[in-house]
Length: 366
Image 1 (cartoon, one colour):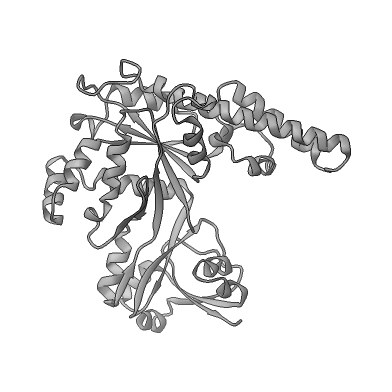
Image 2 (tube, rainbow, N blue to C red):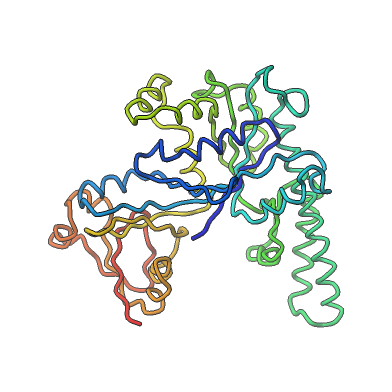
């Protein structure tokens, strides 16, 4: 589906270290590959234990996981909204992303210089927020001016509604709040769809901590959590230094032992990839056969024809029906034929909403 998360943060917060760890995500999940398209863009597989289980049961010729693109965006400085540093390039790169992973420094280390002289996660978050909000205000003002001209010319029936919604966004942004939490009426989001507001994008906060804080967090994590409690945003704790060590270990056994020694069940990178997937409101369905077991990415709530269209547009155009097996049933009975014999294969029509983990086979005619 070509979905993309942008990693943002101030300089020296561990953002690039984290991206480099994601670059080695293959080390976390055996045969799941990673490839670099550009120096700052990676295609990273979504860890999914269900694929491994299906592979064991079916023994296919190949296994294809689903992916997300992760972009390492240049460190932000104050004044980026006015073009300071790599400001315009930075903000342009964020605009192209579907969601934001905001890395915030939550550790003390005199050997790592902080751009503002001391560690203060709430201030750091607000620095980034302010620059994004200022840029969004500029975009909203431009659209208000444009729509007002159309309204005078009588060329836009929705102009009055649009201006009203845009002014709500403007007032909200001027209060130092993100567009995603603006109190607009249901459906009014359509009025900002064409200007791609930066603060309308979903956000995941990643607290980069020291090794001793990776399990329980620390005072900096608590400060950040308190500051974002009204944003309905997920906060993840990761020690980028630990993740960097994990990527240096060659075998799965060594990595598992390393994590166990730290009291962890999975790497922070794996948690981050899964959280990014949730952030984008995505889920997975599978196609499974002897040639290939494959994971497909869809948005939550997608109906069967649209889900089929993710494979090929012809599947959606000529959709007839979908044969569906729930993942838990496939795991229990061990094969498609056994599920069919036990009444666990259902035939669904165009109104069927695909569930996470569904194993699908589409019938179509073009």
